[in-house]
Length: 143
Image 1: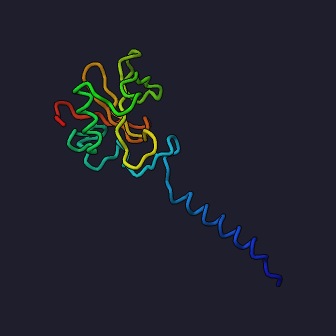
Image 2: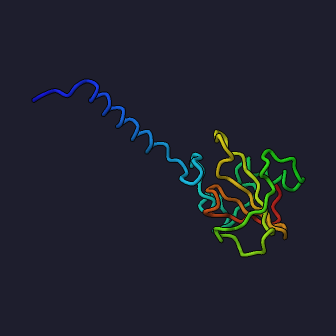
Image 3: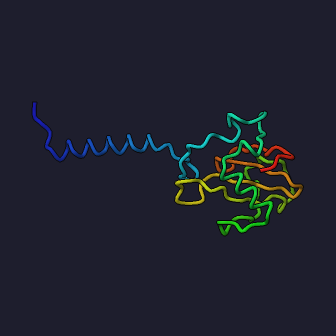
């Protein structure tokens, strides 16, 4: 049996390492951000399906909520822009009703996937998967 040339073996090994690395990264397919966060609708500490108390939000989300309530300053230029609700996951409202704010994601090289969405009536929603799912932040809870 003929032995493969060394460069072929090395090439095959590098391909296998690359494939293994790609599978182990487990990146969010929409944003490229690490998806190590727990889905907003499956947060273990959610009080009931689709709702989460402020105290159960990640500390960065609590900080963002405080900034929203104070009116800023916000760390990203796009904070406060109109959220279009194009995914139609949140209750339907007129354009301009919702606004979005970035929740800092440690280690992310961009804005990451986490956001808080505020509604004109004072309601807040949290997502950690870039709008695929939301948890309503429990009313009356203080950060």
